[in-house]
Image (tube, rainbow, N blue to C red; front, top):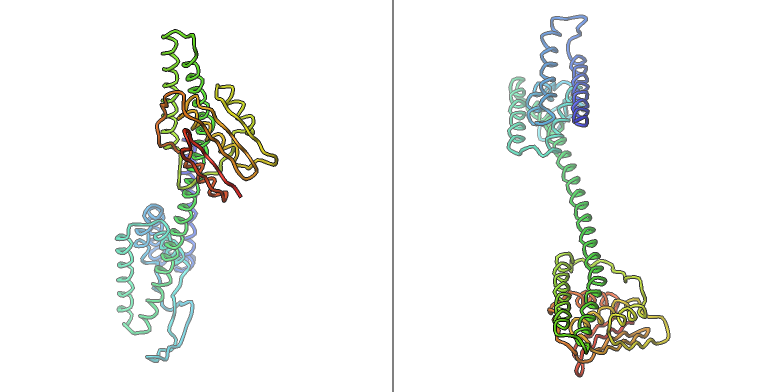
Amino acid sequence: MNGQRDESHRRLASGLLLWALLCVAIAASGPDPMLDAAAFGLQSVPRMALAAVAVAVGRRRPELAVVVLLPFGPWRFEHGLATTDLVWPLALPGVKIFPFSPALLCVMGYAYLCGRRAARPRFVVAAFAAVALAGAGVVMARGNGPALWITMVSGLLGAYVLPYTVGQVRRRLLQQREQAERSVAAQARMRERARIARDMHDSLGHDLALIAVRAAGLEMSPGLADAQVRAAGELRVAAADATERLRQIIGLLGDDAAPAPLTPVGEDVAGLVERARASGMAITLRLAEGQAPALAHAVVQEGLTNAAKHAPGAAVTVEVSPSRVSVRNGPSRARSVAVPGGLGLAGLRERVRLAGGVLTAGPRQDGFELTVELP
């Protein structure tokens, strides 16, 4: 409430200041109140009242203010900003260009606001048509000569058309900037959503797959009662269902058209393999000498996650060298409950492509192999 009250006070103060400036301009261009008070009261005071009306309606409806301020238009043809002699096609010496008065600045301001604030086109056309008719009437009343028509047209162009055009250009430039800012913000939001989706896939998806592996191992353990085996099977299915729901959420969050830069979860390949082994996966790790590729963690994680989902209980071999990463699993020892069509492999393929590498994935002997060749 206080903010609205302060805003209304500021608008009132700015309106009063504008009206005061208009009154000064009207008084300066009219009779001297000290020398001819009667003429001042008959000419200037009504103009001041008209200016008050224009200020009152001009903030919301600048086209109405343009019509109200018709008497302040460029009709004082004897006071042109420039004087020129035209010799073609007619000899017209001393033609006034753009008749000007101090109060005309306010008219130009409201014409600018018509373009800047996107007033309704039909109202603007009606207002400018009224101005043009008034100008034509002034010219015919003063003799209808070609020099007067040139003066009037230059006044209309300078006082109305030019400010309106500047306002239109300004409005469109601001709209383009706002659209660019909204586009940048939307892209940032989509990138953040893609980053969140990838993080969810890299961390939660992997952990859920390891839970399913633990449950599969428990399901195949000897010495369990039938009820315990069923419970372990239900846990494995529940973990797979949760993984599928996570995949659907990732599909909603992700944005394939604007992939975000992705980061690993903060552990090296050896740590990732140890964590997977602790969950019950049988993994053989072969690390060659040299620095592992930057994408090695992502490739191994995707391969282990897919092996855990699609080939529960299978033996997995991980090989990492400076230019090659592969994850190969043998045949499954339990029924897969994973739903095909996940986004992890597609996202990894795009990351490998951007890094200049080649990803191949497909069946091999009785299992499956994921291989990435990097430059």
